[in-house]
Image (cartoon, rainbow, N blue to C red; front, side, top):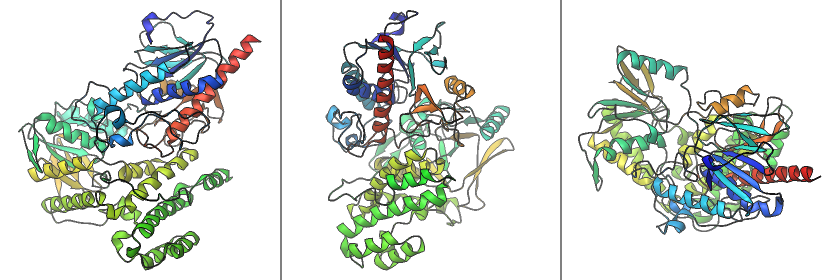
Length: 597
C-alpha cells in the first residue's frame, strides 16, 4: 500500500479511481467486501482505491494504539468479528474469518483493551488489501478530506488538507465514523460562562481525546452523562491517576477529583450479560419483520414511531422474553406456552398486560420496558447520603441479575433488540430515543466496570446525583440538582459533559459534511445525512440518489447498532457494506464497458 507522496495522477487516468474517506473499521469492512465481490463484478483494467484518513488504516482514530491501555472494549472478545457468515442476508459471497478472541488467542469472555482491538483491525485491513485482485492498488493518504466537487454525472474531485490539487474519483464513499461537533446553544453558553469566571467546562467529546489535566485532585467535578463515555472518564481519573483496586476496595492515589454524576435516567447503563446462551433461540422476527416494515413504508401519510412502530417493537421484545421464560422455565409460568402464545399473538396493549399478569405470577419474571427505561421515575430520597446507598443497591441487583442464567429471558430480549434494530434501519431516521434506549439496555459496560463503580462510591471518590439532572451556571459556579433528591444542590467549578457529540451534519466540525450540506445533500429532522437504504448513495433534497457519492456510518439515517458485529447475528453493517461494494463495482464495470465501446 503506497503513501500519497508516491502517487502521481495523470489528467486522463487509464485506471478507475475509488476514494474512501475514513480508514477505520467501516472503511476496512468496505474493502473486504470489494475484495470478496470483485471476481464476480469487476473485470476492468485496474482500480486505484484511495484511503483518506489522518489515522492509520484499520484501527482509525477510535482504536488507535496511542491511547491508554486501561480503556477496554465494551464487548466480549468472542462477540467481536470483522467477517461475514451465513446469517448475513447479502448478495455477495461469505468470507469467514476469526473473531477477536480467536485471532488473539485469548479467553472469549475477556473484555480486551482497545489497543489489542486496534491490532486486530490493522490485521483485518492487511488481509482485506491482500485479498484484492492483483490489478487493484490501495493508496493511503494520511490527511483530512475537506470537500468533494464535481458534476453529478462526471468524475468527482476530493480536496485534501495540505494539497493544492484534488484526488480524481469515479466514486466517493464516506466512511468517516463518529463526528466531532460544534457546540449547541446551551453548550456555548456554558463554555462562555466558564471562560468568564475561570471555570472548567469540557463539552461532549471522545473521552480518550479529552484533556483532563484541568480537573484538579480533590476538587468536585459535575459530570452529566452516565453511559460509556462516563465509564472511560471514571477510569482515566482514578486508575489513570495511580489509584488501584484491592478486591472490591478502591485505594485512592490522592490525585483523583471528586466526581458527582447524574443524567436523565440517573443510573448507569445495564451491565453486559455475563453468561452464555444455551438451548433454542427465539424464532425472530415474529411481530416486527420485513412485512411489517414494508407496510409502514407503504403508508401514504408516513408513520409515527411512538404510535405505529413502538407497539410492534414492544410486542417483539415481549415475545422473545416470554418464549424463553415459558420454554426454559415452565415452572415459573401459570399456563402452557401454546396457550400463552396464541393469546399473546392476538392481543395488544392492555390485553397483553392482563395476559402476562395472569400467566406470570412473579413480577420479576415480567418484562416492563417502561420501568426498565426510567427506573427512578417517581422515586424520591431524603438526602444525597440515602441515595448513595439506594443506587449502590440498584447496581448490585443489576449485576446479580445480569450474571444469573435463571434470568436468561434478559439475553433473549437482547437478541430481539438486535433483530429489531436490523429492521428499523430500513425505516430511516426514527429519532434519537430508540438509539439511546438500545444502548442503555443492550450496550452497557462490562460487569467489572460496574463493580469498580461501586468500589469508587464506597471510597467516596464517586457520588451519584440522580435522575433528570439539571445544571445551572450562576454566582461564579456550576450548580447541579436532581428530581431524585429534592432540595439537594451540588456546586463545582468544573463540569464535564460525558457523552459523544451528536452526529448531526449541520453542526459537524468536519468541513466535508458541511460542504455536502451546502451542495444540496438531504438531512433528516434530527440532522442525519439521508442515504438510499438499498446501497448507501447520498440523497439530495429532492430524494434523488447521487450516482457517484455514498455514505456509511453513524452520521447517516442508515446507522447500525454498536461498533462491531456479533458473530451469527445477521450483521446489518455487513449487509450495508456488501450492498455498497457491489453497487460501486457495478458502476465502475459499466464505466469500463462504456469506455471500451
